[in-house]
Image (cartoon, rainbow, N blue to C red; front, side):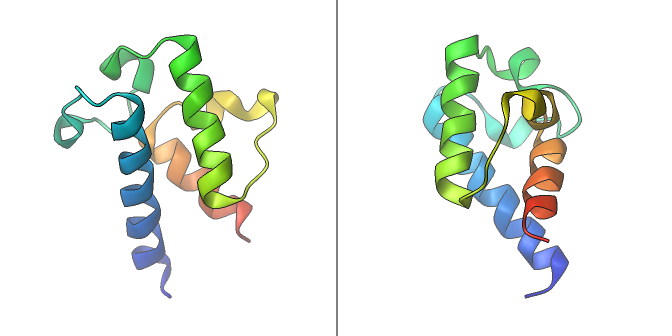
Length: 85
């Protein structure tokens, strides 16, 4: 699998997870560089549930110190990709 298709698959999975956490959000308008909490009205428990779902879906360890790296769509894609290398 190429990196581009892998990133597209990762991005699609992340958006699906966000849709489960914030079903009322219009994810088609999500800016990949802006924090989720600023765009999706997520509270701290929503974000924690999102991180847990990332862990479960991608089988990656996410230490609390790395949570800030997962606050944007582009950040999530980059971190998931880095965890697979």
